[in-house]
Length: 232
Image (spheres, rainbow, N blue to C red):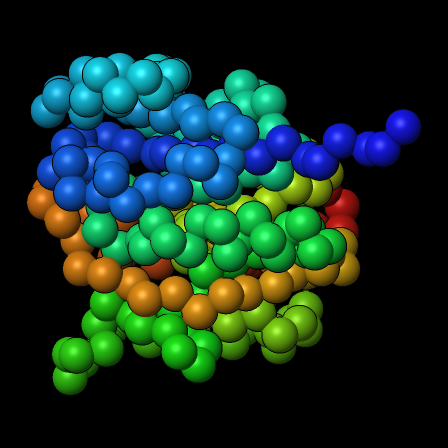
């Protein structure tokens, strides 16, 4: 008997993203995945109703924090491969099949990078690229400490094997979840692959990843990961 192909689950993470959803829904390649579920935290702008009108299962997130959204998604998703997508305009939905393909080809973790050839960062057209510079600085430190060829340790647009996710024992509860995931994947010697992505401009609303507080959280997690080594 031939082994069945791994099932893929597309996880859409939202909090008041109705503008982005309306603009992007027709561009999301739903036919390339086996399951779609939305993890929503207290949206009040019609996001939940929009999902349901399109037949998408919505799981209500009770605790705030992107890290909790990831954990909830892993518990509820049925797929072997998990793709995390935020419909805010920054992430190009046409990259979803590319991320899946890398997992099918043996990657444990696949990241949509904004800092490799043929990619675009949202700040590329700006003179002062404060967010990009901060992201690249964190990635440089991570590579100095744990090696690897990863270029974007922070971007949340990524796909991972469910068993690989569970083996990392992640406990970050906010935007540091992806940073922690990247670090621990390097520690475990995971096969990490990247694809170039074209980061678009945000559609509607405002990011809740506030630069200073998020940067401080990243520094805290970085120091902790140095301290604990592979004991996680």
